[in-house]
Structure formats: C-alpha cells, structure tokens
Amino acid sequence: MRKVVEAAEVLLALGRRLRAARLARNDTMTTFAERLGVSDQTVRAMEQGLSTVQIGTWASALWILDDLASLERVLEPRESLIDRARSERSPGRQRASKRRS
Image 1 (cartoon, rainbow, N blue to C red):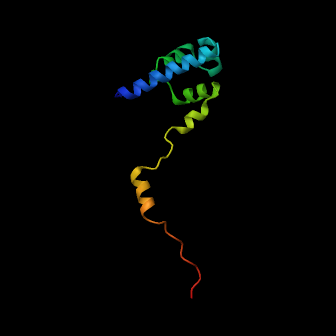
Image 2 (cartoon, one colour):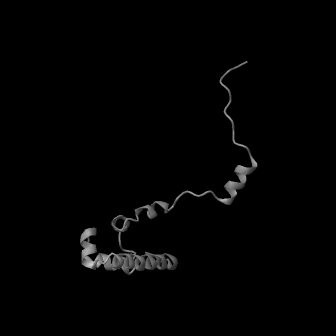
C-alpha cells in the first residue's frame, strides 16, 4: 500500500485530537477501549495515527465523543467554480407545457 504523506499527517493530527478528547473526558485508554469495544492496542494505533484502523472504529469513537456529525461533512458534494459559472451564465431549462394549442 502506498503511503501518502499528507494523509499520514492528517491521521496523526486526528490521533492527537482523539487523545486530547479522551484525556479531557478523564478516560484511561482501557476505559475508552472498553466503551469502543476494541483493544487498548487499537486505541493506541488510533492515537498514533496509524492507517490500519477501520473507518467503522473511527465512526464509533466519534459517536462516543459526541462528534459523529463531523464525519458527515467528509466528501460532501461541492459545486466547482466551473459549475457555478455555467449555472450563472445559462438559465435553467423549463419544462414544456403539456397543453397543445
């Protein structure tokens, strides 16, 4: 598997934020792992930003931390600049009337 440096940096930052959130809740790694239904090693891997942790485990961790809504923004559809320019330039199509004269 090819390692993308930018992705690794994002995972590392996410792991740091997970650790900070866990500590802010005053949860030990063992307690958080039990709530999450995984081993201490999995939580450690998450906090270290390892790419081997399943996305479902991350989703469960976000739910436990009451932050699952942040995952909903991932890959949210966005309008590109070209699409925006096209929609401003040409009016939308109108439906033809069913009545005939």
